Length: 580
Image (cartoon, rainbow, N blue to C red; front, top):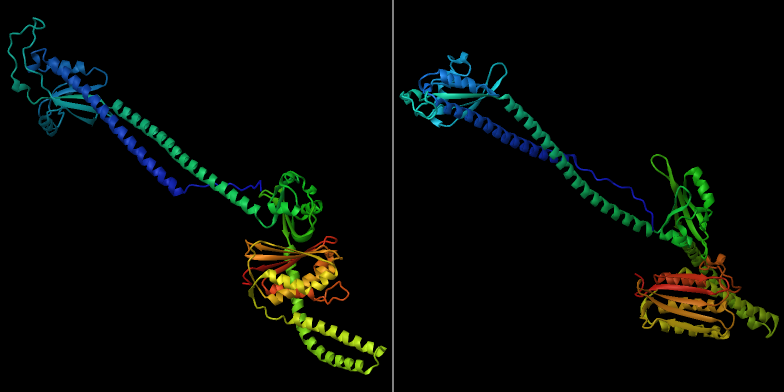
C-alpha cells in the first residue's frame, strides 16, 4: 500500500520548562555581571590608588629637596599647588594628626578642618594607604587616597647645588610625625567607566544568555524533531499496515480523478495489479460503473452502504456493499474521493443459511406432526391393497392395480421415514474411526449403481492420515447421498474422485467428492441444500439437506463448487478431534 498521508504533529515545550530554563540562565547572567563589575571596580580602584600613591611619593621625594619643608609650609604649599594642576586631580593636602590642614593645593582651604581624628587614628594603626569616595562641591564625587606623610630625614640641598650639603641642621623629626597627606582625584571618570563597563558586561552577558538559550532550545527542538519524526514514521508504518491488511477494499482518487491509493483487498476484489492501478483514471477501473458513481458524488458528496455486484475480469460476480464520500479539507478544498468496498458474499451466505435454518426448523416441526398422522392411514391402505391383491385373479388388471398401490404406499412410507429422519435426527455419537474404512464401506453400499454406469473411482489420501472422531453410521449416510448424487449426475464411463486432505493449520480435515458430470446451474446452487428442492424426476429433495444436517452435527461445514459442463465438487470440512 502506498501514498498514505498522515498529518504532522508538532511537539511543544511546557511553559514551566521554558520559565525554569530562563530563570537559570538569568541567574547565570546576573552572576557573571556582578563578578565582572566587582573585578572592574577592583582594577579601577587599584589604578586610582596607585596613581595617588605615585603623586604622594613624588611629593614626599620633592619635600626632601629643601630644608624648608621640614619647618615651613610655603615650599610644601608650592609643591601641592603645582602637583594638583595635573589632569584629574581635584586637590592635594597635608594635615596634622587632628585633621587641621597645614598645606592645601587651594590656599583658601589652609585653615579648614579636613578629616576626623578617628580616620587618622585608624590610618596610623594600619600603616598603609586608605581610600574613600567623598562628596565634593555640587554633584562632584572625589576618590580620596590618604596616608601618613613621611618624607625621609636627611641633609638638605642649598645654594651649592645638587649633591652639596648645606650648613643648616636638619629639622627635628618629632615635628614631622603624625602628619597625613591627602590626594583627591576626580571620581566621575572612574564611576562613568564602571557604569559603562557594567552596561557592557550586562549587554554581553545578555547576548551570551540569548545565544545559550537559543542553543539550549535548539537542542531540545532537534531532539523533539527527531523523536517526532520517528513517531511519525512509526505511525505511518502502522497506518500503512492497518490499511493494507484491512478486510475492506479501500480506494482513493485524487482531485484529477486518478487512482491515488488502493489496498490489497481492493486489488484482489478488482483483480488488477498494483502497478497497473496507480495513476489510472477511476473511470477505467473494472467492476463497477465508476463514472456514474463519481457523478453522484459530485452532487451528494456521500454514498452509504449501497448494495452492488462487482464484475471483475476473470472472476465470478461478487456481491459488495459500496460506500463513498468526497474528501475536503477545513477550507472546503476538494482533495479527492474515497471508496470503500465490502465483500458481502459471506454475509449473504450466512443470512441465507439462517433463513434456511428457520425454514427447516418450522418444516421439521410440521413434518413430525404430519408424518405420524400419515403413517397410520398408510398402514391401513397397504393392508387393504395387499388383501385385494390376494383376492383377485392372478395376472389380471385388479392384481396389477393392487400391487401398484402397495408399491406407492411403500414409496410414500419411505418419504415419510426420510422426513422423520430429517425432522428428528438421531443423536450423533462420536468415536475415533478410520476414515478410509468408512469410505470403502460406503462405496460397497453404492457398488451396484457404480457398476451399472461403469464409473471409475479414484481415491486420493494424504500419507499417514490419522484417525478422526466422527459418527461412522451417520457419516456413512452422508457420504452415500453424495456418492449416489455424483453417479446419477454422470454419464456412463465417468469418474468419481474422492480426495482426503489434512488441514494442519486449522486442526481439521477435508473430504471432497467430485464428478465430471454436467454440473449445476448457477441459479440452482443457492437452493441445493433446501429440503424438497430437486431436479430429479424421482427424487425427494431431502438427500443433500440430510448431508448438510449431518455435517453440521459434527461441527463442520460443507460447500459446493460447480459450473455447467465441468462437473461438481462437494467439500466437507470437519475437525480432526470432533466438534468443540
